[in-house]
Image (cartoon, rainbow, N blue to C red; front, top):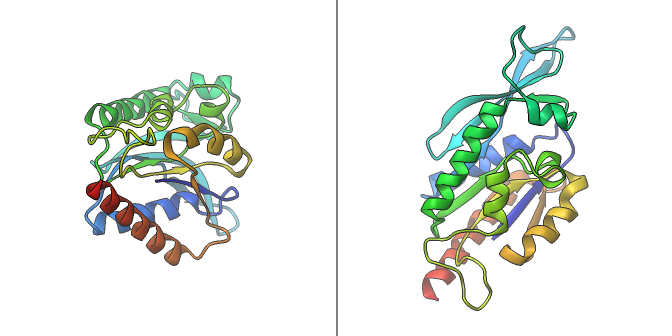
Length: 216
């Protein structure tokens, strides 16, 4: 089952995904991939400003620096050639992209189990338009590798689950691209869905799907 998590900018997609990961882990599922929470600092108006991004590697829960906002970079910033070429607002460190791609390569080598959740924050312009960024995550979504092997009838992984953040303007492209491998994706627009009920219903769907896979 593939879930595409979407919503406008700064609406809380990453935090919603973090809650999903926490809930899945409480149910004994293993979450594998990356979540990219923001780094926030107080601003001049008494609020909070997003000044950077970290990457949380799963299942190890290892944090690495991922990106900083242009104009706020240190005097000797880490190379960010991919993001520079795509003219992104964020300076995404090349070293971080390389480390995250290795994470997804390792996941692919192990295969996804029926109690695993593949987590990708996010598949965006860098991946879908430029073919860069989390290229290994994109390859795994295009052709998921499962421990149980593919479902011979449908060509999909039996009991495989993934949750992927995608911007609204890219959601149709993502649906068309990933449907052959995963079936029709479930689109979760967090701006219009009750957060708690949405997470609970997804976990129920993951568990039901895994049970069906075990019977088959």
